[in-house]
Image 1: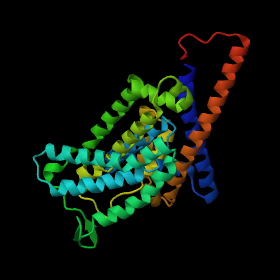
Image 2: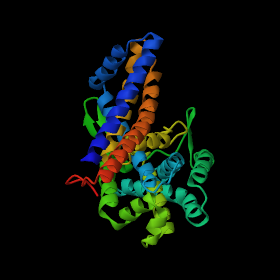
Image 3: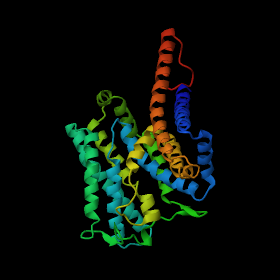
Image 4: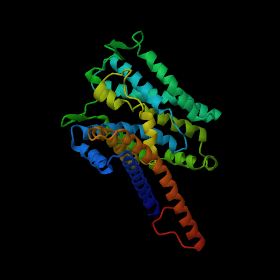
Length: 357
């Protein structure tokens, strides 16, 4: 019960504090916080905002899951950005080159993306496990290499095509698309259900498997886990490979559901957004889902602020404040709970019935 109360109290406190700070900034700039709030909320029923929110949330969710797996073991995979971009590019090249029947074609593209994402993080994983090289340094350096590699792969002289003013991979034929669900004037990406399945798999892996236990145990204390028979090196490598494999799927909802090719102007930044959402959701699959929906809704509804004369950048400030507030709020709540536990132990009061051990 105490843990549940902390899990609910901290994010609620964080969002309230972030909203308050944003309101103060709006007042200082001469804008009305109430007008900003009502404008943002009113966007939900307009046009394709609701559909676009769900689609973006699915992309954010996959990105945050990729980060969260590493976080469970205190590993910071900051290279999710490079992993997903290289995987999307390679998958698009393969998908636009091969000819296969429907379903098989789509599955091949997904498998290529997963394997490419895992392969791109394999070097940092091995360096971390066997040489102790910081995964933060190695993965962020690979982000820069990824940009250069993608530029090379989609050149007209290699695998790309020049179309107008843009360079693109060969278009993926319809047999390789992932069908969506038409809703109003838009369509929900079919990969939304894959994202949901990944969330269930993430929950099952952590809570119902031996590897999940070893992963969490290693995150709490590598020394204690090793003393208990956990192979630390193997756990590091597998955790990072899983993180990279999931990262490889981040670009597929848009690639297979809308764009059907990878170009120089394909979306970027999802990897870094995933870090923020994983922090916001505290690495819990449900928390991450709620964080992804909130983040996506703020993104898509920000356009309406321009109409009422409020800079849409206020949404970026709010998103940053929410993440910062969540980190601070969880630390405050955690300290309060620890002190309460210490007082209870000092007083000899038994732990409440049903409380987690």
